[in-house]
Image (cartoon, rainbow, N blue to C red):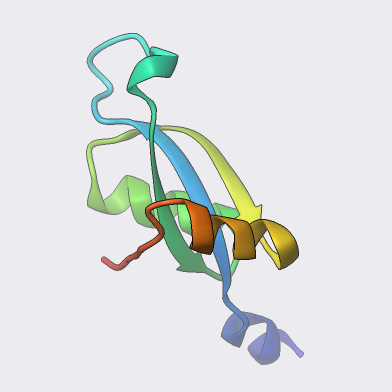
Length: 79
């Protein structure tokens, strides 16, 4: 059962600031899309591979995922 869970990856939208040096400002919030097994894994991947200040990690599924694919600059980020 554990192996099956590890194989299932979901898509997350990660909201971030480009640097940890300044206080976060909503106007400077960016987002990237990442495939991961959990929100914790998604956060860890971004933390390990970027200098970004992560604000929020959001699971995308169903209609929300479909909307993002159609209306946003949707592109999966790979590290």
